[in-house]
Length: 542
Image (cartoon, rainbow, N blue to C red):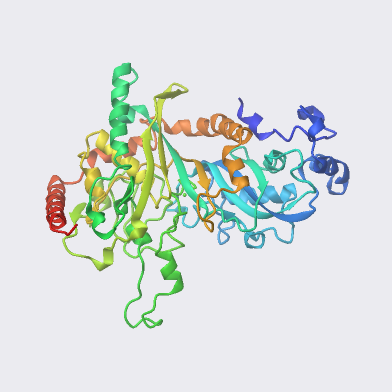
C-alpha cells in the first residue's frame, strides 16, 4: 500500500462537494455529526480553502478523550512539546495544531496544553536536543488523553473512533497518524495506568553473524544463540536480593543499575546546613522514586529522568544521536563526545570500566527504583525488506529506565560478537557491580504496544476504551498499515550495517573493550560474595 493512501482515508461517511477525492464506501452509517458538519459549517469556509467544511467539525461540548497515536520520530525533536523553545518541531506540537484545526481545541485554549489536561502514556520530553544531535523516537502505541471539544453524537455508528481520528489526520504530516479517538473517564491517567510496554528493535541480521549466503541451519544457530543471550534478562541469575525479601525476586526482575544513568533513579538528599534544615524537598523526594509508568523513551523507546531529576555525578541527556554515542563510554562530568574519535581521546579521565563495591558507597546507592521486571526479551525469525535481511527483537516489561533497552541490546550484541564474555550478563545484574556497558543506536527502537489497568482498583481491571484501543481489529489493521507503508520504509535505511549509525558504532565496539583484569576482579568478588551468602543461609534457622 502506498504511503499516501494512509494519509487520506478521511472517513468513508464524509459528504463533500469534492467527493471525487473520497471513497464513500458506506454512506448509510454516516454519523449524524458528520452530516451536520458538512451542511452547517459554511461559516467556517473560506474562498482560499473551500474544503475546510470537510476537515473541521462543529464542536458542541468538551469531553475527556484518549487518542492512540503512531509516529516516526526521525524528523522531530522528541514527543513532548517544549514551550521554552517554540521553534522546535515535536510530535505533540504537530498533534496540537491538527486537533485545533479539526475543531477539537478552542482558540482560547490553543497553545496551553495544561488548560485541556493534556497527558501522555510516557514521556520523551526535556533534553531531546543537545550537541546538535537528536534522540530518535518511534511509536505505534502512544496514548494521549485530553479534554477535547467534540461534535454531537461523536461516536454514533463509529465505536472505534475512526472518523474523529481521520479528521485530525488530514492536518497531520504523513509520518504521524492518529489511529483512534475514544471517550475516556475523567479519572483515567495515561501515564500511571500503563502497566506493560512492548518495544521492538530492528537489527541487521549481519550484525549477529547471519550472512547473505548463510544456510538455513546456520541462520537457526545464530538466532538460537542470540535468543539464549537475550533470554538472560528474563531469568533469575543470582540470589543476592533474596536476603532482604521474604518473597524473593520474580522472574525477570533484576537491578538494571548498570543499564542506565544510576543517579537519575536515586534519592537526592540535601547537604548539611541546607536552607531546608536537612529535610528532603517534596520535589527531590518524588524525583528519586522511579515511577512504574516511566519508559525507555521510544515513547521511547522515551525519559529525561524521573520527574525531571537532574543527575548529580554525570548528566548525559537522552538526546544523543546513537551514531555518535561511543559503545562503552560513560563520560565524566563536563566531557564531550565527538563523533568518530577513539575511546581514549574521548575520555581521558575514564580509568575503570568494571569494578565491585566492597564497601557501601552513599554516593552510589542502588534502590528499588533500579529494579525492573523483564517479561520477554527475544529475537524473532529472519525477515527481509528491500533486499535487507534483519531480525526484530522484542522487549516486554512493566517499565524501563533511561537507555535501559538500548544498553541491553548493545550488551547482547557485544556478547554475540564475542567482544564481551557471556558472564558479563550475570555480573552486570549483580547489585554490587559497576560496569560500563555499550549503548546501541536509537534509530530503530519502536514502541509496539502496551496495556493499561486501573491502579485504584484491586485486580487487573481494564477500562473498556483501553481494551478497544489496544485490541480492536480495525484499529490494529490501521496500525499495521502505518507500520508497513510509512514506518518500515523510513527505518529500513538504518538496516545496512555498512552505513550510519552502525558502521561507526560497530567500529567503536570492536576497538573498545573492558580490561580482562577488571572483569576478573569483579568475578572474584562475585564468587566470594556468593560463597559468603550460601554459608550464611546454611546456618539460618528454618
